[in-house]
Length: 141
Image 1 (spheres, rainbow, N blue to C red):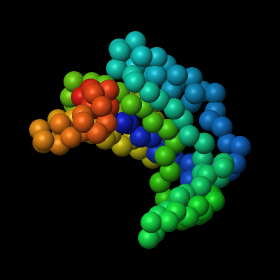
Image 2 (cartoon, one colour; image 1 turned 90 degrees about the vertical axis):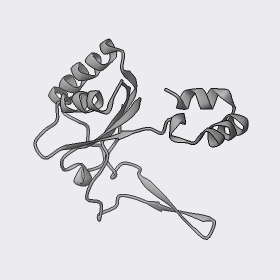
Image 3 (tube, helix red, strand yellow; image 1 turned 60 degrees about the horizontal axis):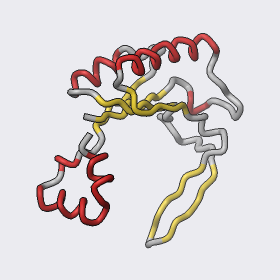
Protein backbone atom coordinates (compact mmCIF):
# COMPACT_ATOMS: atom_id res chain seq x y z
CA UNK A 1 0.00 0.00 0.00
CA UNK A 2 1.15 3.49 -0.80
CA UNK A 3 0.55 6.35 1.60
CA UNK A 4 1.25 10.06 1.49
CA UNK A 5 2.33 11.68 4.74
CA UNK A 6 1.59 15.40 4.51
CA UNK A 7 3.37 17.79 6.90
CA UNK A 8 1.64 20.93 8.18
CA UNK A 9 4.42 22.93 9.91
CA UNK A 10 3.49 25.40 12.62
CA UNK A 11 3.30 29.04 11.58
CA UNK A 12 4.13 28.19 7.96
CA UNK A 13 1.08 30.11 6.78
CA UNK A 14 2.68 33.35 8.04
CA UNK A 15 6.26 32.62 6.94
CA UNK A 16 7.73 35.36 4.78
CA UNK A 17 9.12 34.85 1.26
CA UNK A 18 12.68 33.58 1.49
CA UNK A 19 12.02 31.56 4.66
CA UNK A 20 14.15 28.43 5.00
CA UNK A 21 14.08 25.87 7.82
CA UNK A 22 16.85 26.06 10.39
CA UNK A 23 19.80 23.69 10.08
CA UNK A 24 18.98 21.72 13.25
CA UNK A 25 15.48 20.92 11.97
CA UNK A 26 16.84 19.99 8.54
CA UNK A 27 19.42 17.65 10.10
CA UNK A 28 16.75 15.91 12.21
CA UNK A 29 14.48 15.52 9.20
CA UNK A 30 17.43 14.28 7.12
CA UNK A 31 18.09 11.49 9.65
CA UNK A 32 14.43 10.49 9.55
CA UNK A 33 14.46 10.48 5.74
CA UNK A 34 17.56 8.27 5.78
CA UNK A 35 15.72 5.80 8.02
CA UNK A 36 12.85 5.65 5.52
CA UNK A 37 15.32 5.02 2.70
CA UNK A 38 17.26 2.33 4.57
CA UNK A 39 14.01 0.58 5.44
CA UNK A 40 13.13 0.49 1.72
CA UNK A 41 9.74 2.16 2.15
CA UNK A 42 10.46 5.61 0.70
CA UNK A 43 9.16 6.31 -2.81
CA UNK A 44 9.33 10.12 -2.89
CA UNK A 45 9.63 13.16 -0.65
CA UNK A 46 10.05 16.89 -0.89
CA UNK A 47 9.63 20.11 1.02
CA UNK A 48 7.53 23.03 -0.13
CA UNK A 49 8.27 26.72 0.21
CA UNK A 50 5.73 28.76 2.20
CA UNK A 51 2.79 30.34 0.34
CA UNK A 52 4.49 33.76 0.40
CA UNK A 53 7.05 32.37 -2.07
CA UNK A 54 5.68 32.31 -5.61
CA UNK A 55 2.42 30.56 -4.75
CA UNK A 56 -0.70 30.62 -6.87
CA UNK A 57 -4.08 28.92 -6.94
CA UNK A 58 -5.88 27.78 -10.04
CA UNK A 59 -9.64 27.57 -9.62
CA UNK A 60 -12.18 26.21 -12.08
CA UNK A 61 -15.65 27.49 -12.87
CA UNK A 62 -17.84 26.79 -15.87
CA UNK A 63 -15.10 24.95 -17.73
CA UNK A 64 -12.61 27.82 -17.37
CA UNK A 65 -9.60 28.26 -15.13
CA UNK A 66 -8.56 31.33 -13.17
CA UNK A 67 -5.13 31.95 -11.64
CA UNK A 68 -4.88 33.88 -8.37
CA UNK A 69 -1.42 34.74 -7.09
CA UNK A 70 -0.58 34.28 -3.40
CA UNK A 71 0.09 34.69 -0.64
CA UNK A 72 -3.31 33.85 0.76
CA UNK A 73 -3.98 35.51 4.12
CA UNK A 74 -7.04 33.38 4.93
CA UNK A 75 -5.03 30.16 4.84
CA UNK A 76 -5.17 28.29 8.15
CA UNK A 77 -3.23 25.13 7.33
CA UNK A 78 -0.33 25.09 4.91
CA UNK A 79 1.42 22.02 3.54
CA UNK A 80 5.15 22.21 4.15
CA UNK A 81 6.20 18.94 2.57
CA UNK A 82 5.33 15.33 1.92
CA UNK A 83 6.57 11.78 1.79
CA UNK A 84 5.19 8.93 -0.29
CA UNK A 85 5.89 5.59 1.30
CA UNK A 86 5.06 2.00 0.41
CA UNK A 87 4.26 -0.19 3.39
CA UNK A 88 2.20 -3.27 4.21
CA UNK A 89 -0.55 -1.63 6.25
CA UNK A 90 -2.16 1.55 7.54
CA UNK A 91 -0.70 0.74 10.95
CA UNK A 92 2.82 0.66 9.53
CA UNK A 93 2.24 4.01 7.79
CA UNK A 94 1.02 5.51 11.06
CA UNK A 95 4.05 4.11 12.88
CA UNK A 96 6.36 5.84 10.39
CA UNK A 97 4.36 9.07 10.66
CA UNK A 98 4.62 9.02 14.45
CA UNK A 99 8.43 8.96 14.15
CA UNK A 100 8.62 12.21 12.15
CA UNK A 101 10.61 14.77 14.17
CA UNK A 102 7.74 17.25 14.42
CA UNK A 103 7.54 20.32 16.62
CA UNK A 104 4.78 21.25 19.08
CA UNK A 105 1.50 22.11 17.32
CA UNK A 106 2.58 20.54 14.02
CA UNK A 107 0.50 17.93 12.27
CA UNK A 108 1.04 15.17 9.72
CA UNK A 109 -1.90 13.83 7.77
CA UNK A 110 -1.61 10.25 6.49
CA UNK A 111 -3.63 9.34 3.38
CA UNK A 112 -3.64 6.20 1.28
CA UNK A 113 -3.13 6.60 -2.46
CA UNK A 114 -5.66 5.01 -4.77
CA UNK A 115 -4.91 1.40 -5.61
CA UNK A 116 -6.18 -0.46 -8.66
CA UNK A 117 -8.07 -2.80 -6.32
CA UNK A 118 -10.20 0.16 -5.15
CA UNK A 119 -12.05 -0.17 -8.45
CA UNK A 120 -14.43 -2.95 -9.48
CA UNK A 121 -13.07 -5.54 -11.96
CA UNK A 122 -14.82 -3.96 -14.95
CA UNK A 123 -13.36 -0.54 -14.16
CA UNK A 124 -9.92 -2.12 -13.68
CA UNK A 125 -10.17 -3.52 -17.23
CA UNK A 126 -11.24 -0.12 -18.52
CA UNK A 127 -8.29 1.56 -16.77
CA UNK A 128 -5.89 -0.92 -18.40
CA UNK A 129 -7.53 -0.38 -21.79
CA UNK A 130 -7.55 3.44 -21.64
CA UNK A 131 -4.31 4.13 -19.77
CA UNK A 132 -2.20 1.03 -20.40
CA UNK A 133 -0.70 -1.63 -18.23
CA UNK A 134 2.08 0.65 -16.95
CA UNK A 135 -0.41 3.02 -15.28
CA UNK A 136 -2.50 0.14 -13.96
CA UNK A 137 0.59 -1.65 -12.60
CA UNK A 138 1.74 1.56 -10.89
CA UNK A 139 -1.66 1.75 -9.20
CA UNK A 140 -1.31 -1.81 -7.90
CA UNK A 141 1.58 -0.97 -5.62
